[in-house]
Image (cartoon, rainbow, N blue to C red; front, side):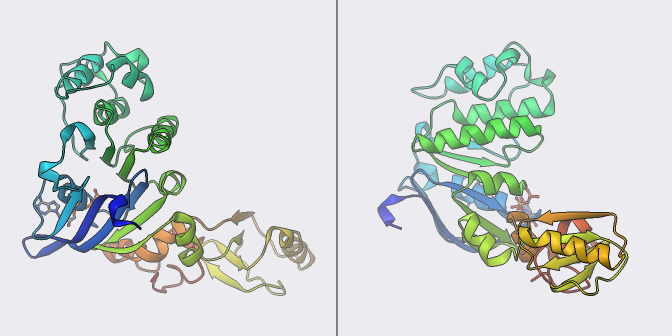
Length: 325
Ligand SMILES: Nc1ncnc2c1ncn2[C@@H]1O[C@H](COP(=O)(O)OP(=O)(O)OP(=O)(O)O)[C@@H](O)[C@H]1O
């Protein structure tokens, strides 16, 4: 990447709380107009990294740069930030609240335009405290966009927002990026990250363990598309490698044209099954491959990760007591 093109830059950022290293020497560079999604387990360091990048926490070492300057010196008119925890004045209506934040900038957008964008056109006169949790979060997203920023940094913008609202936010991010805005978001929604981001960075234990376009990560870490047969039986005589997981058998290396052959083999051998599911590798598989074991360690249940999560994941990921890494 051309260094001059970089809009948000972390260089060897490090931040510890006591003896816990929350961010352990992270370097990344987000270019102009790029949508970058940060993913990773709870406590991985996403918020700490975002706070260091936006100047709300001081890193112990390393540097953060936004639009060519330190976060404390960046032109506030050019940046929109949505923190993970954000408590705006509760007694203001949605419209008043956007007008209040708009008033903090030299140049700002019409509150009603922003209300429409975040799907709150009908809630302009409702006090913040009387909005639902998801509506409040939508409004908070709006406050980050009210100054028409060049760089938008949002920590879990869609947490608490319903599926249709998530699509709205995703559409917003798409149109921001189409207009040249640089966007950094953190999210626990893998489909959202995969769908909206040009690049995804996965943080685990304060380390940026992977950072690439979603399709590159999927090709590298997510394994093959696979067929999951829900059965108690073992599958003999199927022309593909299989592995038994909780609740069924994963048939690997089948392409869609091979599904019929597998079903025929099951019928021929009288193998009972309750369902068959086809699964394409996706970013959730990447997550489970690179960070899935964290949950097993935390819960003391390594190797017992649920069927939906790891068992339908890449070959060898989190099943049968194997390490996910
Ligand atoms: N102000 C703080 N004081 C002490 N420890 C902190 C503080 N902020 C964060 N931590 C610790 O730093 C680590 C990283 O936390 P952080 O909030 O950055 O994680 P995260 O990836 O954003 O998690 P989540 O997905 O749950 O939001 C955690 O172990 C957390 O307990």
